[in-house]
Image (cartoon, rainbow, N blue to C red):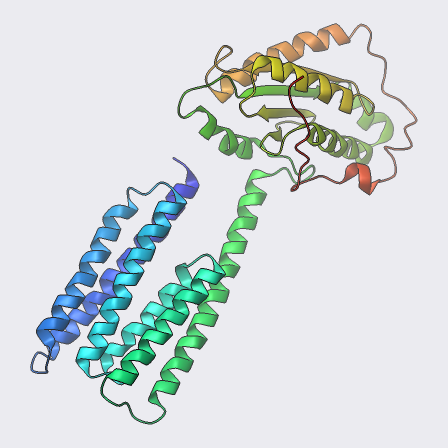
Length: 355
């Protein structure tokens, strides 16, 4: 199962559980103060809040897309805000103990709303609703409303900043886990994550896979040094990306072994791209490339890689009798050239079309 879906479900479960607990505490408060007015109305409202949290716990186990998760969380949040407003109003206004529901709602908004504009709007709605209760309910002591609003603003700012720091760190850790640090290409884990959605609903013509292997790469390391070999690998990735569309990907799966994934590409398109990659990489080093296309060559990533690797090996055998040794004096491999070695991780040029 997708790790990101699991993480999304865990966050939704936590959010829904916190809503259940907070409304459960509010129900306990009502039961402890049954002699005061409006307790039956408050119990009904907080019971609805608990029910929405329980529905969220159930829905969190079913959610699979980010959009559906946002819709469920947003609905629960709005229900909680309505319940907090009614509870505070019936309990005596902005200075009542039930008004703490606005504070917990503000924390939820800041911690679990990913987009800053949406978070700002929901935070403003929460503070504005509290101010409406203060204006229409029982008068609060001087300075009470000001301190409540100031506390909510501070909590929203701190929780929002912390949530965004954690989200950025998770994104960085995910990138480190899925990218090759030398070339910026996907690693084996990143390749598996990128391709598993391509095989879920059956194979249309494509995807196609290309397996690339630099001929006699070991001699480059032996004669020019490992730094030159590293630069050659970086240039291979950069040159290959210039040929690919933005939706395609390249992964480094071994020392000088790469896999290119062509989304929605048939075998004719795969051969066209193979020729263009060969032309782009060959000025730096001779390369052998094998291709495989779903569904005729297989319906899984492993099968396509095996077929493409077998064809690569046959091509390498064909190259071997005529392939000369790698150049011994390549001044462009020795110094670092930012224009040639820079690896594009974004804004890739979607440059090719079949034929």
